[in-house]
Image (tube, rainbow, N blue to C red; front, side):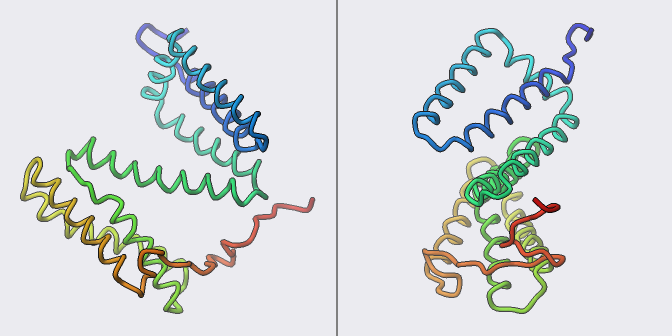
Length: 221
């Protein structure tokens, strides 16, 4: 039995398992009536859990066992990918969510831990993405190196912007990042090299012999 004031890892694991099963069911639903029922059931379940005080236990479990549950969350994402391994649309949704989750984790570090008011986070995300797209489209650089260069250039641009931000405080720091975001957006819209407002169509990439456009096959079915 857990000591008073201490929560075990099990509430978080159970909640994660339920959420994973619910997500698989929701993504796999194809009929509109079933989707509506699942959404309504999910909302009702969350409200009931909050009324019974279960959400507090789950939150405490995630706080106290962050590392263990983070590993379980990675396993849950892999389970979702395994179930829908042949469904391109669902995989696109999952990957998009994961990409934006990484971006928001960066904002959590900046806002929550460093206290830096950065409203240009999406700009750095775009710098890395557009760098990779341009190098892939106009050079013969290996694709693994393309991804690395995209990340490094985004980090370099962020470091340059950090210098004036650290010299300001409060609202002034926010204004600097907002100005940078607007300038970057304008640059993309007027630059035909990067596709203008419509963006770029990225060609297929191949890393370590595996093409991103191919379906992953494990064994023979």
